[in-house]
Amino acid sequence: MYVCMALATVTKGPIGIIFPGAIIFLHILCTGQWQKLFKMHCLRGLLLYFFIAAPWYYLMYQVHGMEFINTFLGFHNLTRFTTPEHPTRVLWWYYFPVIILGLFPWTGLLLQSIKASITDSRSDDLEKMLFVNIWWLFVLIFFTISQTKLVSYILPMFPALAIVIGWNIARMQKENYGIRWSWIFGSGIIFLLLTAGWVIGGQQLPEVAFGGIVLGSVTFILGVSIVWALWRYRDINFSAWLHVVTVF
Image 1: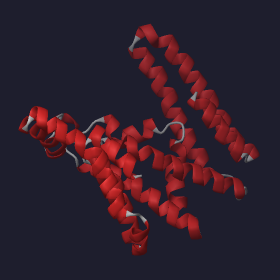
Image 2: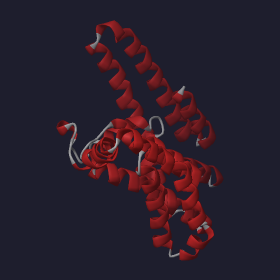
Image 3: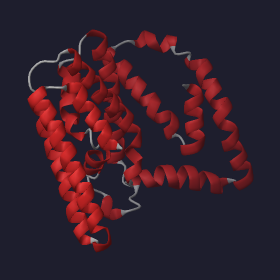
């Protein structure tokens, strides 16, 4: 973990240690398990972290002097966080469309999965789900507060959301009963919206209009198949695999 944080700090700056450090600390704070700090080898780990990350910063300072500090740490980290580089994107809801489209075709499962991770998780699962929920929430809030916004910034939250959705699918497979209405409505709406997006988007660009119709038709057929499998056969496994097919 400390090696990975050091490499992240070399490639992306202080955020390489801020994210994992803050998420782990918040999880310990929420669970009250302060004894875990003594099992994390913090002192040796931080020494290893600085041993890997510090030399590059030192060498860059030797070559570029204060210009490196002002540009890399000052502008690209502090200034871009506090000052909008793209003023038209300073919207509190900027990342919600990114999540909806970026998580497709699993978006229809997202809200139900987050809810289930809080209300339906038990014993060990509850603590694990708390960790991944803190993980994605922290990343989302951090970059929502940030004044400079780019689509790719929230990529670190997608693994956490994937874990929550995967856990929920596994839970539903074990407790295979009833019709999963939330999944049916969620995926049905998302697949219909993307179908319309392909077709309408294609009409705006005549050279790709036929491709838009083809993609829209495939998306619609897969969406209907997923809804049918969930409603008629209540087949969680087959529906999940249809989502995988949709990805390809």
